[in-house]
Amino acid sequence: MTTTETPDTLRRILDYSSRADPYPLYAELRETPVARQEDGTYVVSTYREITDLLHNPHLSSDVRNLSHPMEVTEGQTTPAFINLDPPEHDRLRRMAMRHFGPPHTPGLVTGVEGDLTATVSALIDGFAGKEQIDIVDDFAYPFPVTVICHLLGVPREDEPRFHVWVDAIVNSIDYNPKTDPKEKLESGVQARKDLQQYLGGLLEQRHGRPGEDLLTRMANDDGPDGRMTDDEIVATAHLLLIAGHETTVNLITNGMLTLLRHPQVLHRLRDEPDLVVPLVEELLRYEPPVHLIPWRAAYSDITVADTVIPKGSRIILMLASGSRDPKRFHDPDRFDPDRRDIQHLGFGSGIHLCFGGPLARRETQIALTELVRRLDRPRLVADPPPYRRSPVLRGPIHLHIEQGDGGGDNRGH
Image (cartoon, rainbow, N blue to C red; front, top):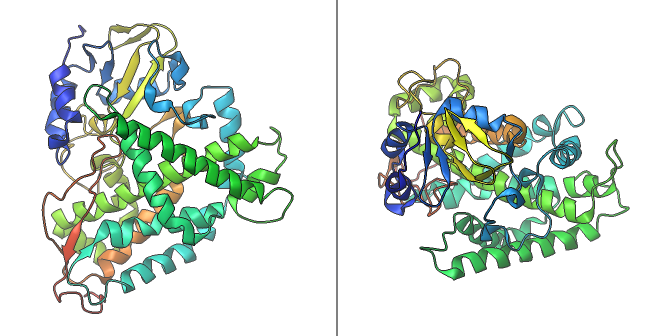
């Protein structure tokens, strides 16, 4: 297979004007599964090739293996394990997983289900009397940030500070020095520093003290791999707050938008609440919260689809494009909660598979079930809604809806 340059297609995908519907452009990309760009970057857009790379030990997540290091990593002194390679990645991920899920903490998700449901119910109660509801500001943002702050042991009253930091960091993820103002990067760098300093201060209070929150557990645990350093704990907490929170906001918001666009599925979910489990999996394929991995590096020359990617090259993996690849999924542009074999790329794949996936799934399942059950004939105010700037973490920045009774008591029918 020959590699051709398709800079215009990628440029259009990254342009904000395409944010509401990038999928036709992904179809263009898939015509050339591995496409070299003018700057030497390789864009991979088909399911099989993306999956093969995510499982390829010659693909690096460490920015230091790029021939031309990227500025976006400034401001983070210790990288999170998502930006490291084995064996260091594996060690740190194991240490984090001891406190975040099975086998060492198998009840983490099930243990907070009551709190998840209570938080969702309280937020929906707050819709009463409102003519319009913003699913993002009134629900999808405060829900997961409440959960992750609780799990980490962050005081709830500090949440407004997190909103400012998170927005600045997310906006800087796709920083392009050719088109974006330097302030976009500088704001993200400063937000990383402020967030790390804040988390470091919380961590200092946890050493030698008992507690069930994740910061306390990581600060005082001596497992088979030893104990994390304070810098490693802060980097892990930073990852949980940013990656875990922002993806869940987008997943819930994209889910509600998709249901409102497919009213027959919305009504069915109201009558069949168990449908929510396969529905969320299909949602992760059809409208995922993460659309692309903006960079990976080639440890050595890698051959993908008969194309040789040289050592040190930057590789962009178009996850959302792969999950709509017609060679892998039948009728991929149709939302079908009854779809079988949904091996989507919504949480990535391989050694960097999102380790917060089980929590994000359960948060979204509870959120969508309760929204559908309690909202009275909800309808979109604007379609498409306004979107966030980022093409990486893609989702509406606002999702305004109205109810049939103008707010009412939200009990639904």
